[in-house]
Image (tube, rainbow, N blue to C red; front, top):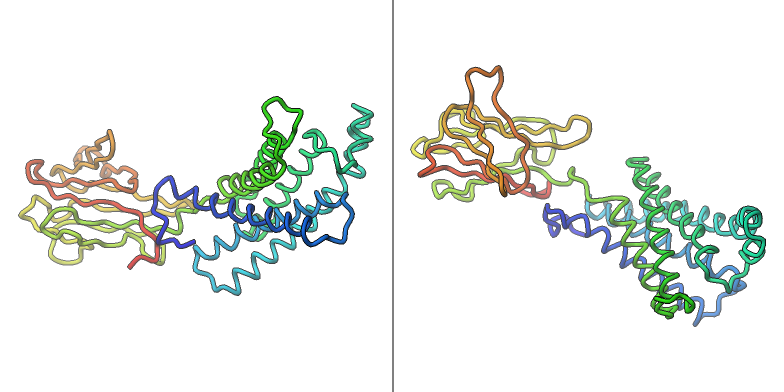
Length: 342
C-alpha cells in the first residue's frame, strides 16, 4: 500500500477492499493446508472456530497494517499495532463460536425448532441457519477490534462493516457449497475461497475507506504563461489557511501576469478542517470574469458589490478556475494529491 500509487478518485476506496480480500484468501489457504495436510491436534468440532479465527485475524492484521503503510508508520509500529488487534479479535471470535453453538444457539433455536436446537452443535451440518450467526459474530469481533485500535474512530461504521461482511461471507459460502440448493455450485473448496474473499472485500470496503486527511489540495497553472507552476494549499501541516491568486507583485501565493486578465487579487482558495472534515472553497475577489468549471456545471464567482461577502463554492479534485477574458483566459486547476507530495 503506497499513497503515491492511489489517486484521489472514487476508485481509491476499493484499494483497501482488494488488500483485505487478498489477506482473507491467504488465510483460507493457510487454514486449508493446516487442517488437511498437517493434521491439527483438535477435534473436528473446532474446525469452524479455528477457521473463522484465522480468517478474522488475517483481515484485522491486513486492514491495520495497510493503514500503517499509508501513514508511513515504522514497520515495528505497524506490526505491533496490527498484531495486538489480532489477539484482541481472536479471543472473542473463538468464545462467540463456542458460546453460540453450545449454549446460546441451542437455547434459542430449541424454543422455535426442537430439531434445530439439538443439531446446532453437529459440525457436519453446514445449513445457513446453523452457521450464519457464527459468521456474523466473527465479523463484528473483527470490526470492534479494528475500531478499538483506531481509537474508536467511526466505531459504528466498523461494527456495521463487520456485520455486513460476516453476513455476505456466510451467504456466499452456503450458496456455493450446498448441494441441495437449486442454484448452488456444490464445491466446498470454491465456496470457502470465495466466502473468505467476500468477507475481506466487504470489510475493507465498508469499515475503513482511505480518509481525505491523507491528501492535500494543490493549485496548478494550466495556461502557457506559467504552465506547470503549482502551489500547495495546506501541505504537510494540514492547518487552515487561505491562498491568494493574482498579479499583485508582493505577498501573493500564486503570481500570474496581468497581461492575461488576472487582477491584483482575483481569487482565493480557503481550506477548512472544522468538525474533522477537510473542505476546500474558492472565493471570487474581483468583478472580472471568474468561473469554476467541472463536468456539466459552471459556477460564476464574480464579486457582487451588493453582497456583504464574496461568493464561494466548494472545490472538487479536477475543478478548473477560469479567470479573465473568455477569449484568452488564465486557467488554474485544483487537484488533490498525497499530503507528502513536494
